[in-house]
Image (cartoon, rainbow, N blue to C red; front, side, top):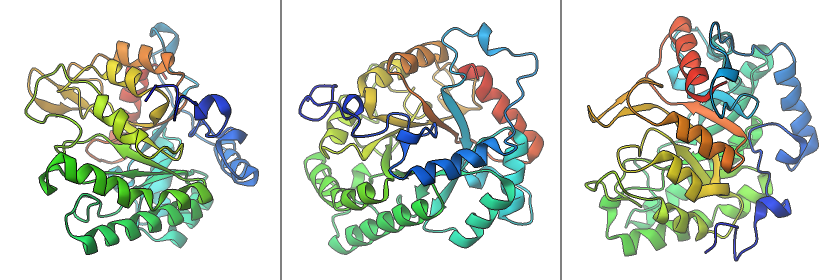
Amino acid sequence: MPDGGFEGLSPIKTGLVPRLVGTMTPDSFSNRRRFLQQASLLAAGAVWPSRGAFAAAEVPDAMAGRIYKTLKVGMIKGGANLTEKFKIAKEAGFMGVEMGFPGNDVAETKKAIAESGLPVDGSVCGEHWSIRHTSPDADTRAKALENLKTALRQTREVGGHSVLLVVGKGEDGPENEIWPRSVENIAKAVPLAAELGVQIVIENVWNQFCYDHNGGSDQTADKFVKYVDEFRSPWVGMQFDIGNHWKYGSMGGWIRQLGHRVLKLDVKGFSRKLNKFTPIGEGDIDYADVRKALREINFHGWLAAEVAGGDLDYLKGVASQMDQAFGL
């Protein structure tokens, strides 16, 4: 299927799906009031990151004004309650928080948003590693579907617009079995995603699916492209993790292949030389090519840090690492 879209029709070019999923433009939401509510949260005293001596203009293909920093809620250490955690994230320089649903209290999350002025940009689907869409057990797949639907509803309720999903594990069976059964299961949630205006964003992870886990560093994103296109829906795309598959291929190359399917980003560092994950900006990921590729696909949206957590000072350091790696 061509990169231009579903059956050659680009949902981005035709306006069927907001390309700027995370930029809080009016076209990014099915409900204009929802946009205004989130935009006002950012405008009302939002703490934009301090780059210190670092200047985005000095970085080729800088992504300032195109990328918005968020982080996983579990990274925020300290704070007696969720509101205090949101305030820590805001002070550290983040523009949103990525929650986990089901698994977090919706009312408490709404309170944290209101009292901190920091929005929830999206969520991670709860228990997706253990309750999988690839499972050979029909009851397990039914539970995975219910978890996904709950995540979509609760994410919408707190104003978020994406749910990160790990579809399953390669250990659940041969690819020619787990591929169609996971697509069939997840597809049952797509009408709800469209109704709510919340996108299902699949993460590329070390789950032995859509890549060769024991293969080399010359792999492509071909299978991820084909998998996403199976859904034939603008409400399913990728939350592309830049660190996860640097071991297996060119991250700039994968971004170019995935194109409009990249709806959101995760980031962590990785060193091929040391064969381990690293802090953002360390290791040997080619961030210059990543930035260039993101500009080539005209990416505007959220970038989520996915590294070890810490206190306010530590999170300020993570935000600064993101600024330097992406020219923010």
